[in-house]
Structure formats: structure tokens, C-alpha cells
Amino acid sequence: MINDQLNPLVVIDIAIFTVQDQQLKILLVKRANEPEKGRWALPGGILIPSKDLNLESSARRILKTKVSVDIAYLEEVCTFSGLHRDPRGWSIATLHYALLPADKTHALVKESIEDLIWQNVLTCPALAFDHELQLQTALATLRRKVSSHLLPLHLMRPKFTLSDLQKTCEAILGQKLDKSVFRRRLKNNTDIIELEEYEGGAQRPAQLFKARTDFEFKEPLV
Image (cartoon, rainbow, N blue to C red; front, side):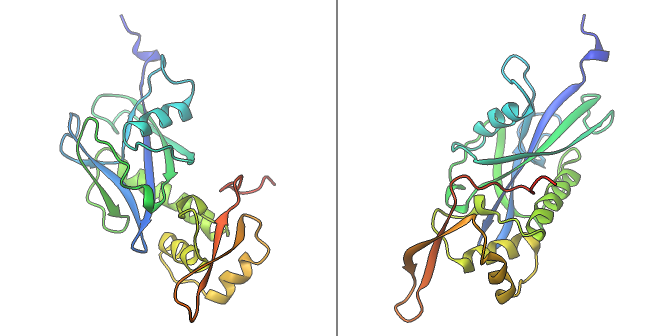
């Protein structure tokens, strides 16, 4: 007999962000099974102790059932819990978020879901469980990092222009940034590397950059 005091339901939910057409978008899946069958939700799954060494390994296993490429950036955000957040009973949900560049958004697979969409974060439908709150929490975390001048380079294509990078930051923050101020902030940034390559017309070609191989999208330790 299972001791309920030792076995709350533990799930991993993941907010996967990308930028398409200068819009910040979130991956939503339509649930194929109960509970909340037919409703849109963040992708997620149940922790399996026999397979998962820790919460991150559980999140990456679940990601592989949704996205057939390795996602470089994944971060735990916070935990949601309670008796009423899931109709199956007392549950713990650990929220993670991931960043996926637009050129890899085609690499999606469907498992135990009816459909999936990339939805603008500002126009999402009502979501299952407490996923609306989870999405807003993940979005606030992402925006806080970009507001503190961290660069979301995991969302960029392998080679990008500074205008591309600025538009990506603007899509995340939901506001325009002053070009000269943005460029000054990048002047001594070691996370981006200048390339002797350009794209665009012959009149005003734009210089290309790439991300430093070992850059990290996190605040420095105080």
C-alpha cells in the first residue's frame, strides 16, 4: 500500500521561449489525455525516480519528447505546490524555462499531445492547471535578466548582427531600446565576438558577430 504522506505527484513544467518575426513566443501543447484533456498547456511531464537523477535531468528527458534537438540553455525558476493545482491530488510542479533559437523551432515532435503551437506571449489562450501563472513567472525571470543587461544569446542564430540582437532584446522586454545606448553597453562585452564577415547590401553591410562558446546567461555571483 502506497503511503500518501510520502508520495505527492511531482511534475516538471517547461516554458520554452523563442523569437520569431520580432515577437517573443512560447511553446504550447494541447493535452491529449486527462486531466485537462484538450486544453493548451506548457509542455511537461511526471518525475520518474528510476530514470531521473535530479530535476534538471528530468526536465531534459521531458524536453527530448517535445524537441528533437539539444537545448543548450535550461534553468530552474521556482516551485508551485498545493492540493488544488492539479485534479489528481496534492502535487509539486517545478518550473523551468528554456531558450530555443528560431532556426531550430521546426525540430519538434509530438508525444501524448494533440497539437502544438508557437504562441505570442501576449496573446496566449487560457491554459490548463496553473500554467498561466507559471508562464508569467518564467517571463518575468527572462525579462529581469535582459533588463539587467544579460544577453539572450541562446536565442540567436550562429551568426547575427547587433541589430538582430537588439530586436531580440526588444521582443523579450516588449519595448523599444535606444540604439546608441544599447551599442554602448555592448562595447566591452566579452560574450560576443566580432567576425570579419558582413551581410546585407553593398551600400551599408552589417557586421556579423557570434556568441563566445562558453558564455553564460546568468548574473555574476555577488
